[in-house]
Each structure stands twice: as C-alpha cells, then as structure tokens.
Length: 445
Figure 1 (cartoon, rainbow, N blue to C red):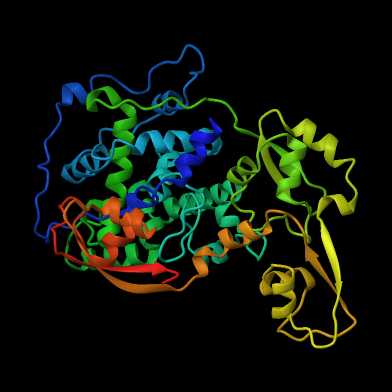
Figure 2 (figure 1 turned 45 degrees about the horizontal axis):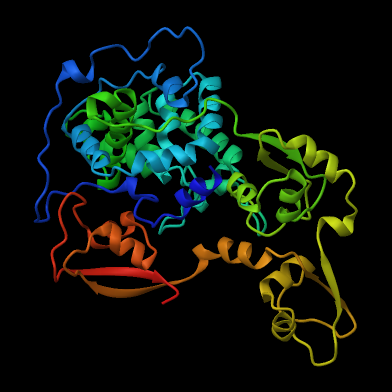
C-alpha cells in the first residue's frame, strides 16, 4: 500500500492541482460535446439511504450524506466531462484519501455542515498536501501565504501550518463557515469567496445590484477560475454519489482513522521518529507534510501523526531517548578565516541551515565560537523539498510537437497542467495543435 501511495504522490504534475482549470470557449480546437445524462439514470434514488451499520468504504459514508447532487446545469455538466476524461484521477485521489480524507470527513461532520465540503481538497489540490501553486498557495486546501497569516496559521522555517492536515483543515473550515455567514448562508457564494476572495464576490454582487441583476453565484460575473470552481465541486460530488450512472469505478477507501498522534516531547529527527514507530520515513513525511525540515522545531514540543497502531511503540521508545539521540549534531569550532559558505561546503550542508539552527542573522561569525551542524541523514532532502516554492522560475517558450498533450508537457517540465493553462489562457477541453507556441515558467532554468 505504501508503494502505491508514494507513487500517487510522485505522479507527474498532470493531476496535481489541475482541478482549478477554467473552461474558456474563446479558443479554437476540437472539443467534446456536452450531453445531458438521463435523470432516471442519475437521480434514480436518494443518496441519503438509511444506514444499517457504518459502511466499510469511506466513499459510501460520504455518499449517504450528500445533498447537493440535484444542482445541475450546463456548467456542471462540462465539469463532469472534465473529470470523466481523466480515468486516473479517482484512483489517485483514493490512494491519497486513505491517509487524509477520513479526518476531513470527521471534522466536517462535527460542524454539521454539508459533507460535500469534505471534497473541496480534491478540487483544490487533488488531495496532495505537498501541492504548491504558481501563486504559492499550499497544502490540501491551497491556502495563500497572506490568507494564512490573516487567519492565524502558524508558519516558520521549520513548519508550515498550511500544509499540516489538522491545522489547515481547521483553518479552512473556520474560514468557510465565516464566509457562509457573511454571504447570507449561501454555500455557493461562500465557496466562490473562498476561491476568489470575499471582496471580489462582494464587488460582483454590488455591480449586479446596480444593473437589477441577480446576486446569486450563477448570476455573478466572476473570474474564469471561480466560474468553474463551484461547478467542479458539484460535478465531483455527482460522480461520487452515482458512479454507476457514469460507468466509473471508485477504489474503496477504509472508513477508519489513518493515524494516531505522537507527542514528541521536544525536537526530534523525522527519521528517528520513523524508526521508533517502526515505519518507513516516507510514511512519516506523508502524514506530516507541514514539517518542512529533517527534524521538528527546537522551539516547541510538537505532535507528529503516526500510522495507526504505532503510537505505543513510539512513546515507549521516545521516553528512553537522550537529547543526543533525538537530533544528531556535530560541534565545530570556528577557525580564523572561516565563513559560513566555507563551513557549509566543508560539511556538505546549506548556509541557510547553519543560520537557522545557530540563530545567526546575516553572515558574521566569530573565530572561537562553536557552531552546531546537523548530522541527520535526511536533512538535505527535507531542505530541498521545503524550499522548492522559493526557486525563481525561468520563462521559456515551447513549441507543441505532434503527439504532445498538456499532461505530457506538464510532466516533462515538472509543472502543473493548471499552470500551463493559466499561463497561456488555454481551453482545457481543446486539443493542442502541432506548432502551437506555449509559455512556460520552469524552476531552475
């Protein structure tokens, strides 16, 4: 299962975050024709079936509570077609859902809000907590840095709450409930405001009011992405509610918790935590995407999510650790003529890492002082992963070749389909044409 899960995260950017793609009919190209499904097929029964016992499949648990499936129009139909053209989408999100979705469903149910809101991370990030957009929105709920600060999300060099499952879910649901109240308890408007910003939605409403037009979501003139954001959530909920009607098979997801909570009691390397829990490091990283470095923060004793059934072993082992066992350090006495760059090269580490762990501001160091240098085996990988979104992208042109697709190009240049569409104002339903010129922004040149 772990191997499949890791593969789901390492797939090309063709699926990660592509669910924001707007539909724009102004571009030429062949496109599929929208066809209305049979209401008899689609709404043959009520999704709120009376359960006799808790279902084994989490999708079925969600299905039994759905209420938005009869909101239907042409935009929702096109959005359904968008998903149905991606046969790998639901298998990928089901793999990821095995770690994250149970918790999200539990939190949505506790608040007694529509269960469809638990599906929003599927639209936002394809349930990938490591997803970072071109505008640096991050995590399952794709929270922007400024929005995160405004909402009080804790983020520092060691940790980003926007990527943490529990913190980001709490913040996102708090924000959605706040927007729901602000927009007269209209969930469609609340969702639009979550995507476009409440100021943008409010301005669109005021403009419509002046013209004597409706102020509901479907009547507003909103950005392209937002016009297709709500239909995509509704379309996805319809497919999950009625998979047989769309000839779709959705891999089951266990309707049970995926993790226990471990108290670290202080700073600890993630690799050491994995060893204590008896699991692979990649599983600790997958469950704790908010941890940006090879170790937890030295400032606070943080909790780590651990695979179900491993917390006892973890706590037993951590109680026996000395401080030296928690994080492995080498102590280096600064010599005359040393500088941070030279020391970083000597120990095959990064200047920024030396600054952070030794609380150095700027580049000034003094001969005779002692630096702590981390020796944990995974620090370099975690540093690179955490800093990916800081790399300045390089603009480059690309000419479409015969046989190219958005997915193939996205995978080749390690960008997302959503970004390619946004950078070039493409119609996601139209085919690329050989010779067509695209603009790409590629990290690392």
